[in-house]
Length: 335
Image (cartoon, rainbow, N blue to C red; front, side, top):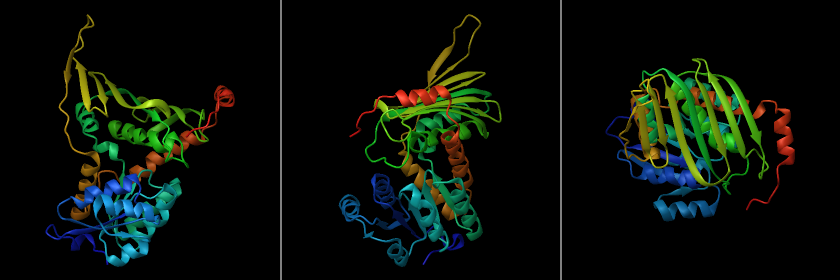
């Protein structure tokens, strides 16, 4: 049996389940099992090997079906199942008054995302979308540094090797949706113009994406993402009228340039960056929103908005140059 917000006192343990025991779901379970005031009821996964791994790593109860988890009784759930299952699972949980954190992207389509948002609103339950990069301490430091600044441009690079686990989406949904969310969050403005360049060089879906955007506030932004780089890189630069901020999201080093002089000189300093695990910070934020009934850090509406921009990137007509490049791209087997 689930509990409403008014039933969840600060002294009672919140009963939470996890759906999906892949890499992300297992990490959810690990973090939740260590949070004070939280009882990890168990993890659901139809694959026995995934359940066995969860038992080995977390020593928690596992279930083969969602119904089994629901029968065990939960107040909240985190959904780390494949994206095409988000809609069905989220609606089933919301219908039972269960609070939901769903991993990004919120759903496969904008309409499915809107269905989830509407259902949560009507049921009066907390709905949060797992855009975990917002909780990266380096991202938080960048956001703090540019507050009250007149932002001019944003450039984000998110590249790395091809992930063997990825099969049904390309780099836009897997990677760039993180940065679409960050652009919207940094600027606090909607993206109104999308100019994508996509290519499928070695994979069946797009594995190179150069995405350009303009926000309603006039900020120019671009994202460079691919699965062709042999190492991971995650970099953000933000130019404002008064500052130039650079951040490495992997090493968590953030540098600020300021005090620009007519002779070209300027000052530079390293900004303080926290050490929190992003996923832990995200899940604590979700638990706090459930207990307080407040607005979650990443709302369902925000998740839908970022998904809509990502889908616009995929559906934009290809330019003749891009089509020619895709036809001429060498093909090789990806292991």
